[in-house]
Length: 272
Image (tube, rainbow, N blue to C red; front, side, top):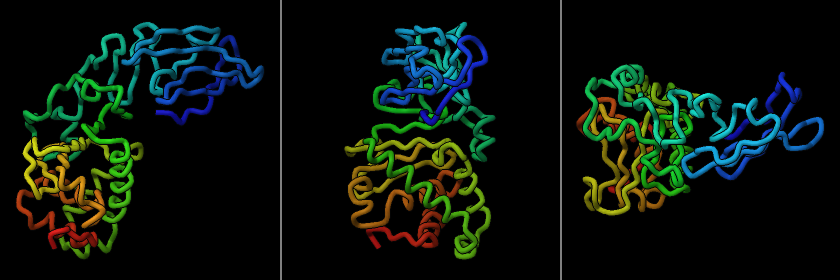
């Protein structure tokens, strides 16, 4: 989303067109590099449906809503892993995140689609005004924007640590670092294939004193109220908690290896 600087058009009007964005990362006006004038204008509804598509280059520029390619014949937006239909506000095909083939690709042990996978056709929890989905895979649920940014930054930082030689030697278990590293190896988004669910009240399985919880073979890290409030104040940041929960998610049910992962990452639990 965003990041597109210019588009070279080899049809009339021929030339290079710079991309102008709105605050949500949608291309709203290609501007001719030659004449400094708008060559197209786009406006979108709340679900990304086109309201206005005008200008001589409007149909030739494919990058519009969310800076993704738009198919002129269907008005569908082509994300990296699936197609989005803004006219209906849904994905025509299911989310590959919980499909057996995609779970196998991500080296998840469970071949069963879990009951908590939810609706595989929904787009960012049916809440596109407050959530984003850069690849058609990642989803934050109930997290404030500041929390989302902190999650991404911390996850990237701790991904570097779990791939280090020092971490492997400390842990003495080479399979865990390799599997944690696998989840980190997405060049576009370090949280590839993981849903972070921020729970700000004692619901959804959270009890007082809980930091977070997840299930072996699952894809959701549930951040509990105490975890969201105390992390960074009484203990290390979100990165430690996410690596702890990812160790559960790759198949380790007991606390032995998740706590050892934290120790080797230099993390401090607030109860220690």
